Image 1: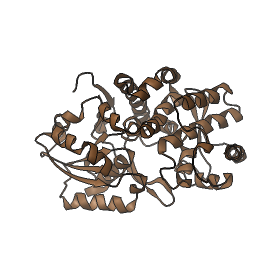
Image 2: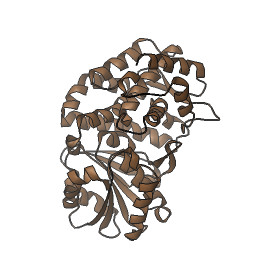
Image 3: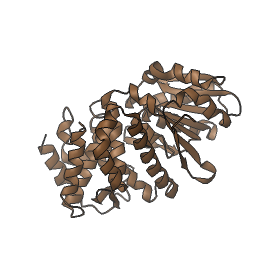
Image 4: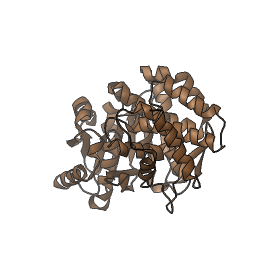
Amino acid sequence: MTDGAECVRVDLGPRSYDVRIGAGLLARAGAEIAPLLARPRVAVLTDETVARLHLEALRDGLGGIAMTSLALPAGEATKGWPEFSRAVDWLLAGKVERRDIVVAFGGGVIGDLAGFAAAVLRRGVRFVQIPTTLLAQVDSSVGGKTGINSVHGKNLIGAFHQPSLVLADIAVLETLPARDFLSGYGEVVKYGLLGDAAFFDWLEANGPVLARGDRAARQAAVRRSVAMKARIVERDETEEGDRALLNLGHTFCHALEKATGYSARLLHGEGVAIGCTLAFELSQRLGLCSQEAPSRVRAHLRAMGMKVDLSDIPGELPGAEALMSLMAQDKKVVDGRLRFILARGIGEALVADDVPGDAVLRLLEGALAGR
């Protein structure tokens, strides 16, 4: 491993794997992946942006391991049936076998799509995640959730399929546009809000230097986020209990993403940040937490230059009742009831299945009135 790199183990018995975190991991990808290989070849799924910036560096880092690659269009629109079918057909045409390794080299879209392709290809082949965005490094590359979007909603088609290894190269984050980095920061903040108040304190103090590019701060944030997710996934791999807490902000977020057509109007982590703000506001209205908590969440996100309110989303949005209808398609609906992740305070999230619909409606009406 590189000097200063760290390792978080995701302990799932025979499906256990390491998440390696540090600068320079791309340059030694071959040494990291070689122990997993039955034969010296990998098939890489990536997107056109990542391919342009980093594919040759990955090829060099793989050394003597042969590499084929397919670059899909960048963006959330790729995460659907057409590009998924294209990826699976490409893997089959390349004669990828069950003992081979598929590499997901990109952000959350590529990680989710490539992981799902690996899950269904020949009834399951192994894959390695090399996440290139902050959002993917702290969230989507860890835990084995894979999938694509449907016209009915986000991530409704997929499978649980754990990677065999995750390589989170902190240096790669330096090519991210500032907006994309801050989008990923929305998921980082989520970890402090849902179960680690001390981490949120640390982010309030270190968020600005982290955003400016400090590698040590970035590595610390990724390691702490991954460690928290790993412990939750170990307790609840298929989201039947505690793992639902990782969806803090996501019920609102997914409805807003669908309302904006999964477009550049709203990036996923931006939706998470707005969703977390709304979840804390709803928690305060329901008497679960003090007024100080949502105010503090809002103040930190604002200080980081992030989207906080519905008014920060450009263009038109549907009305409150239409947004409620979009939420009803969410995966977290149980017996027709919306499930929200709410909070008793910063670092104290809980699963709530009995949230009154009229309280959510009033919250959204007020948020939309502020636009």
